[in-house]
Image (cartoon, rainbow, N blue to C red; front, side, top):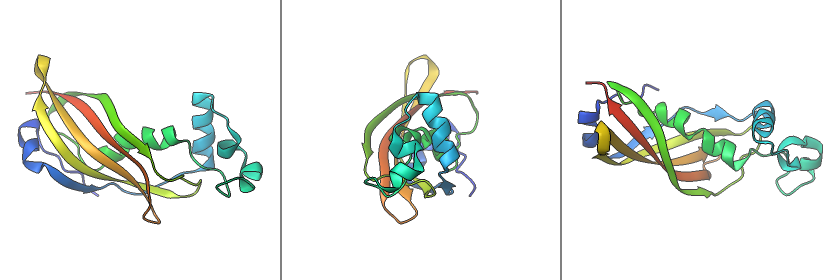
Length: 152
């Protein structure tokens, strides 16, 4: 999939649904590395044998691992051109709606909500993101705010 590549001046014309990212499969190795990075080694994430007997029937990704994929997956849908800096500013209205089993695939549905000027030459861009599982359930929803500095 080729992302939409508007400049900041063109971006407001695209308010509304933008599309979907590609699919990402969640691996046990990825979950284990995230557990090491965050020091969250709860058995439902890192112990496949014990997790098989648990509430989800196997290991599941950390909710924050799912959330951490938002910028990468969103950039597959929207890549603002002509900017010299992009800063992850906020994530609001986060909801973890369904567990993400190891081996499942995720993609992001992205909708552009707003574009507005901010101080010091930045432009604030807000997108609504729904992290969709390959069985059509929604794993996570959030509003992601990025500040862009125009290179012009």
